[in-house]
Length: 248
Image 1 (cartoon, helix red, strand yellow):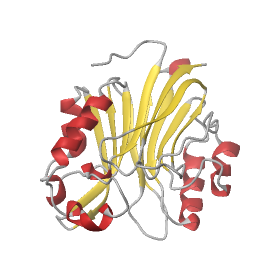
Image 2 (tube, helix red, strand yellow; image 1 turned 60 degrees about the horizontal axis):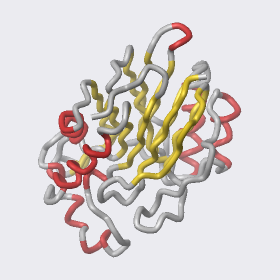
Image 3 (tube, one colour; image 1 turned 90 degrees about the horizontal axis):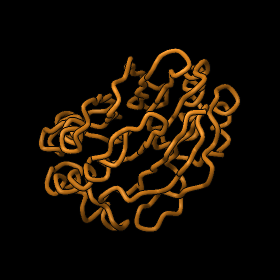
C-alpha cells in the first residue's frame, strides 16, 4: 500500500464503467448483460483496487452506488476497503430504478477538510461534480472530479459552470472523463477563467484496447506535473490517467 508523502501527490482518474469488462467494440453487444447483472465485476474491482493502492487520491467516474448490476454494492466503498483508503465519498448522479446507478467518487489517504457536490447543467440531467478541499492557508488546494456530457452544447454549459465554481481557487486539480479533448473549443473557459492549465501532453484513453481518442484528463493549477500517463484500468473501456504532482 502506498503512503502519501508531504511534498508529492500521486493521483489517479478512472472511468471504471461500473466494473464491467469491455475489450472490443463487439463486447458492447455480446456483453450487454453486464450493464444489468453483477457477474464478473468483483474480479475487475479487485484489479482496480490493486491499481488504486499505488495512489494517494483516486477520482472515479461511472462508479455504481448500489444497484442490481453491482450486486447492490457501493463500488466506491468496496474499492476503499480493498485498497485501504481511510476516506471516501460518493456522488450518485444517475439511477435507473434499482437496475443501475452511476456517479463520481473520491478515494483518499488524506482527510478532506470539506466535501461538496453539485449537479451540472445540461440538456439531460444526471451529471455532476464532486469537490474536496484540503489544507489551510497557503497549503489549501481543491480537487474536483467530474464526468461531462457526450454533447458539445451540454459540455459548454457544464464547463461554464465549472469555470465559475473554480475561479477563485489558486491551487486546484480537475479530473475526469470530459468526453472531449483538452483543447476542444468548449474547454477554453477553464483555462481563461481559472488557474487550470492543459496537461503536459496528449494522452489518448479511449477505447482502452486501442486508444485513439483523448477523453480523460487531469488538469492542474498551482502544481508542477512530474509524471502524466495512461494506465490500464482493469476491464474498463477507458484507460485511467495517473499523475504525480509537486505543489509550486
